[in-house]
Image (cartoon, rainbow, N blue to C red; front, side, top):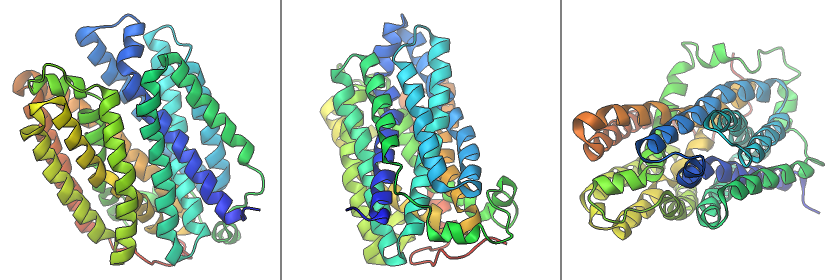
Length: 401
């Protein structure tokens, strides 16, 4: 018999597996799905940016909805409601016949995808001791990110409509694991206190905005990597001079091989160093080197580009440390709100990242524009790490006044 705590960790990890499978799926299926709807050339790229940004807008809006509900109604309620939402949306993606339908369902999928990670990480963080917390969240993030790797490996081998349907069915299957799960004792105890729970105003007030904004900045290089270098690898590869640039599926696969390994490595490193911040600094130094390397040396061939994507994926595996820090930074009455919004606001940066890249392309060219955007994201991330407090080993039994 699996203990309730272990089952909670497993359900959170499997939920994030399906979450990442579905989140990455559009990047893998962008070209075949839009080609199947009759688009080509520049129209295909523009529609891809539109759909990515519509999905991301849904994620940002959904994170505020699910975050507040996680603190008001419970972590488990949000975990399973968000899984249901994105599963139904992805089933619908398998039957779209027009771009407006596609956009509406990607937006709904984004709303659903917004809730699972924050609720799951909060659930796991509050269920485990300070000593075990980093290991538990590393397991959740690592298994979850394997979902993205699975999407890169499997989705290109199936008809694009079938790939979406598979994602929806996987998510609905998780709903059968709801039984025998309880809210963490920390959450149940704080519901008895006369404290405001799940307040956007409190997260964004002067006392806490200085924690939340730097936290979000820490991880934006991940979505520069995923939003441009992975999703638009054919366009970037062509601009670098490759005759046969890598496909999004190839870039996704190699990047997430690195991410899964990196998540384990940096999760364990933060435990060994007794520091979240030192692990984050090491990861970002590696990413900065990787961004330079992919433009300088990755242009020689698709294989070289993919090798650098593997390295960048490895160093972007600080995601486990990031989401753990998000849960540790805030008190129990705001933890679900902040931990849900933080990774989703990071994903939300895909909108200004892709739009600024596209805006600079006609004037500077594809590669210089991408380089400038990457440099800005990297500098903001280092500033974010410097600004956030160290959270390793923090007792989570506290509330925000």
